Length: 466
View 1 (cartoon, one colour):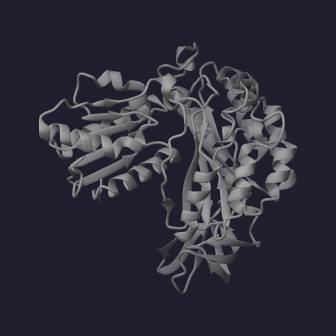
View 2: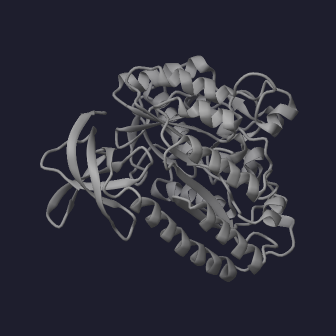
View 3: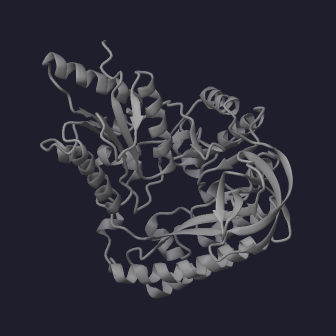
């Protein structure tokens, strides 16, 4: 096939989660292989590619807005829509021109070839196909896409899992992403080695439901329990292999299902010294009644026990979480119970989300839907508590030496400072007299700012990270 993409200017936009961001970077690599040129999304381009999100109705609206914005910047450009919004709602656009090409999930690795074929069909006057979306039952098998997704050239994201079998009552993702599937250990290690050779020293391991990594070959009962009857969890095995790669110094985990945390898992995980003591355990609510309505498969007592286990095996780990406020049927008493539970757990950080109705989910059909005013009021209360918890967690480490990656240089009050995160993902700033970007610096925290950044002073340069 002739190459119709050489020299084309392509603008990319990724909406939603880190997994989408990873996949967008992988798509870019495919287009580079055709000789295409990347330009900013705000610029005039031949192609605009939007990796959409559908986690909430607001995300749907943002996806449509960005597609329209691309069309407005250059009406003659080819607009390509991919991702979760496309997977769920492509049939709504069979008669409109919101996008020229729609590509669903688990076909993103084909986008460059699909677009090239689109251009060829246009040039030859042939039939132009617009839709490349598998039905839900076909969303199986892992789609390998290698990417070097970075944050400030010191931290790289690596997707190892896709899909979700949990079916929480508020969530559309199991339908948009399909059933669980896992990347092969061989491909994971191959990409990790590539990242290491490229100078990256910290890897963030991500997935749609990371705790289900490697479980698709097990029975449905074992999948639901998040553990095999015999042997260790596949996630633990692959983390050990990642830790063996020379040059990789930090392994940070994406969001985990609380039920994966057992004595055995935490004990073995703590033996992998490169694993950061930073665990994002999704909670969603600190009220058992609301958890049942959400179809979360644990109680607050079980969640608290998981946190206790982590604190047993790791020194003051950063326990972060997500919480939804204003869920259908959540009374004021339920909300207060949830907020009190968050304070009892002493989270290092909470991402607070007002409940957003999502068409196609069980929760969308529930009675007891709250007004936006109620949700905003509860959000404000929980955010106030969250700030106090985040500040208290940061203050524990004042006067303590820690290693921080210099991710960027900033200027405050005329002083050049380094800024970066430690292993617990606490953010530090500290004066620097030279450019130490990409290096690990030992610092001592001296104070905590109102935005919970730790002001520090440099003690020593340990070694280069990037």
